[in-house]
Image (cartoon, rainbow over all chains, first blue to last red; front, side, top):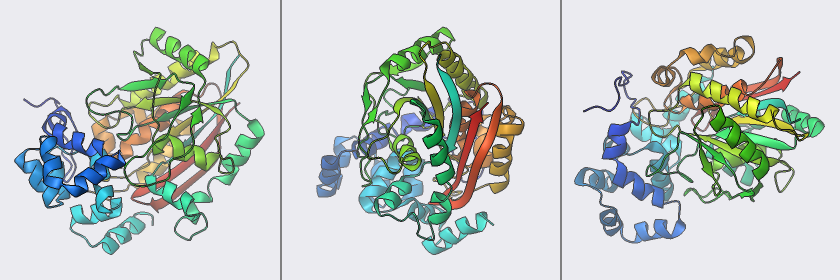
Length: 117
Length: 279
């Protein structure tokens, strides 16, 4: 059952509601652990083992392995926690924007500039 | 009697921390953003508030989905900033004002805002960076602080109308405090931006400007919108304008806009800054 009565109808936009929060709990919990530098190092040293310790499901683990941002969101990832995973990979939010929109980073940054005109 | 002297609303973006650490304030990319702040710094220097009540949203530093309060109020003698996972420098601790915190907590609960109280509370970039922007010269923030955290991570979020009322309740709690204190309200977040999904990069300048105008002309204008409508208009993280509405709700009496800045983009965000004075 959907926990919210009204889902967003905007293309390419989801609100992180009870359904996603339940679905993504393990993935988000792992990303939350990346606040700690020792945990970031432990992940880098053994990604598969680290994901397993946090109980990621197959969809979540595949999205982590493939660095698939839209896949991570679809698997219940919340962008505030995923940003910590992106930090490990050395990606900023414009890299993430480019990856999600299928644009080059330069084109994505240009789009942001255009929004100011 | 404690008095709310004014309000400041500003965007918060982790990249600001990196820009400060690398002294990029006059870099062409950053200059239009940082140049917005000196008038506000000057006002703070003249008014010299004793306490800042800082309305912000945590991004997964202090709170996780295991226990996620809708509204949380700090009640500590000190608040620590900490590693958020992406390598921006950690700022020194911020002094609290536990006495006024408990006044606020008692007042809010009496006013039917059943907030969560936090005697330990890490404060993330949404709290720490605006303080550094407002008091850039001091190693340590010179005012005592009270963090008020609003959930924007997991829906349902409190509505815009509810956040405005929280601000009004904060104002009532401060006004009933007998000590002579000058209090400034600082709200951080927004304006329009979206980090996630195929619509990442969404910015809505027209809505942002209308919203900024409304805070003087018709402060409750944005409370007509549901959070889903605000996401449509401002992006998934643009909904952080709830902090601005809470701040505006907390400003009593006649309110005058003294300064504003608006610049697109910093990082993925339309950056806004406003200074209001209570007359």
